[in-house]
Image 1 (cartoon, rainbow, N blue to C red):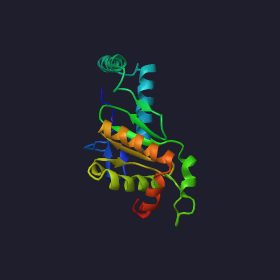
Image 2: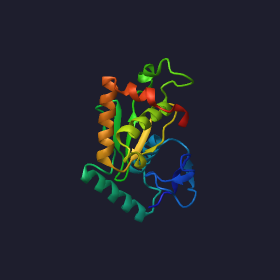
Image 3: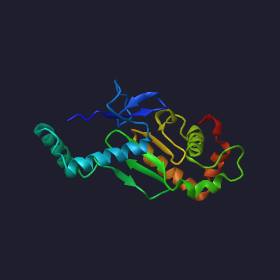
Length: 192
């Protein structure tokens, strides 16, 4: 079964699939929403197909049911795996991509009080802060990490599960201890 959908990435100026991989052609169903929405759309599609897949051909229905059975039998990897222990949330959506997002972004806007310009603690501002953090503490890994933040959401993603879990934990620890303020003061907010 091949559903022809995808997303337009303003970062790479190309169409991508739910794994962030470039698509050769423009898909029939396109969205320009953030990567977090990609995971939501995939979950909604899975749910809708589980509830009513009568429009599928018998071969597609069999293939989809096998996919659902394998996902349920595996207990992980095929459905979202989330860790919400910290402020920076780790999520493993599929076998190829892991995400770190900042939940309740408005809760941390006070850290940006008194900053020059239009810095307000939105998703783009947090992206600048995390880039400063990566540049100093993870310079080799920095190139492997992609961002897809929006005004109301911070999001970074990469295929390295261990690295993304480590970053989620370290950033949460620094946010709680106040150490993150160092990177807020060093961030290049104009580069985002």
